[in-house]
Image 1 (cartoon, one colour):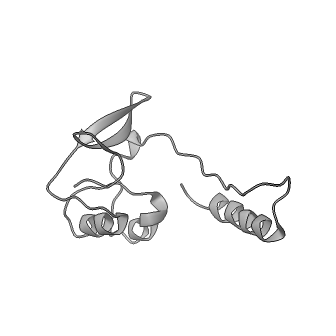
Image 2 (tube, rainbow, N blue to C red):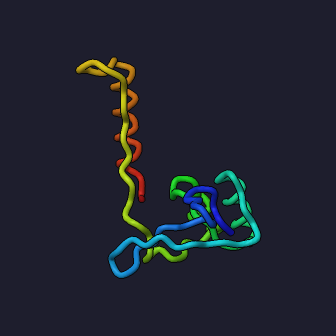
Image 3 (spheres, rainbow, N blue to C red):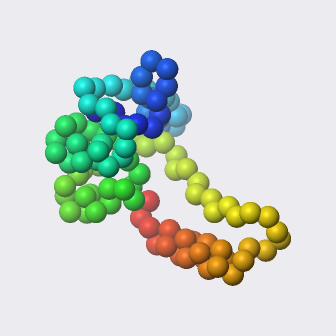
Length: 110
């Protein structure tokens, strides 16, 4: 099974941390999906392994429908940014929204 992201010429590549260094490994399989929802559902149904962001599969992990494998080889986490257009100060609505995001994601178990 392979996920849609990370596609490179000649196949899909997944990033793993091996001995402290990030390596790009070519993966393949009979099932290919162009969206995370299809990939996740196929994995839940036993089609193989896949990759997804934790927030996409948290409920399935918590209920035991999915199991985390290769966790010791996860690449470093990617930062999350909130970006807004122009001006020295965001509008009150944008500020409230970014404050909400900070509070929401600070409570997450990544």
